[in-house]
Image (cartoon, rainbow, N blue to C red; front, side, top):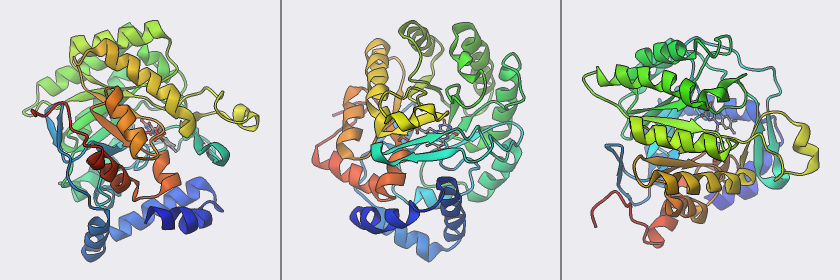
Length: 349
Ligand SMILES: Cc1cc2nc3c(=O)[nH]c(=O)nc-3n(C[C@H](O)[C@H](O)[C@H](O)COP(=O)(O)O)c2cc1C
């Protein structure tokens, strides 16, 4: 199936504008998910043996999830759940709807199997996302909801902005990802700074602690943070009890041809893999198992997923790999993990 995608479907899709193709895929998924015989057929084709894992108190049927940004409006979750993922991270959703940056804002770096995007959290806002989820949940797999900051909200007001979005979306997520690492919202990454991060996270954790069901949080980090900055995030994760998602896209361009270096935005895909893995390795080493880690960045096949799990990730996520390798990538990864005898560390042997 993957072969067919790479040889035929990708060749056709790659003739068109990347964002246009993505929107068409989401629109089709919205239609398909209302046709149970079709979703059942796709689920059957995408099915692989379960590789169960428990992370942050949540049971996952396998460790491979969908990364944030693919279904920004939480509108195609039922279809996506049928592709064999162990979890979906939906969003990033902001409190109020916003259009994002001017187009074009997504570029395929084909020669390196990368993507540069500067979408800027285009999304329908928390209320509309909640309305969609109301119609789609429950799903057979856990759902994470990624939260971001509105572009017109100052960095000082960010904690309130995230908290209001969380209050609206809390009933719908099994976990929440706090996105402080998109390079496409001005000043967003300053929320990695110790004091700002604490002021952002503590109210979110306090809100969750006051609810009937206390749900876990993950902070998604940039691979571009210096070592000292990362150490302070790691220690805060251990102290306050949240997980980390390593990593979001990079603004570095050393791993792509000269031509692409002037393109603004976040780089993902194969050229991100080594950068992201070195952050993951460091986080796992300094974290010493005190908090869970989700690995994201450059997974295009089974060996790359296994590499992240071996480096210390408890779960992994894919985005660009789906674009280049097709929707049956999850099944290919799971089959590889099974063949490699991968076993989750969080399960008793
Ligand atoms: C077009 C595009 C949009 C993205 N939007 C988001 C987003 O809204 N929130 C987020 O946390 N990450 C977003 N990401 C980053 C991905 O979730 C992922 O962390 C990153 O692309 C690295 O994984 P990959 O190499 O498998 O793509 C986006 C990535 C791409 C390519």
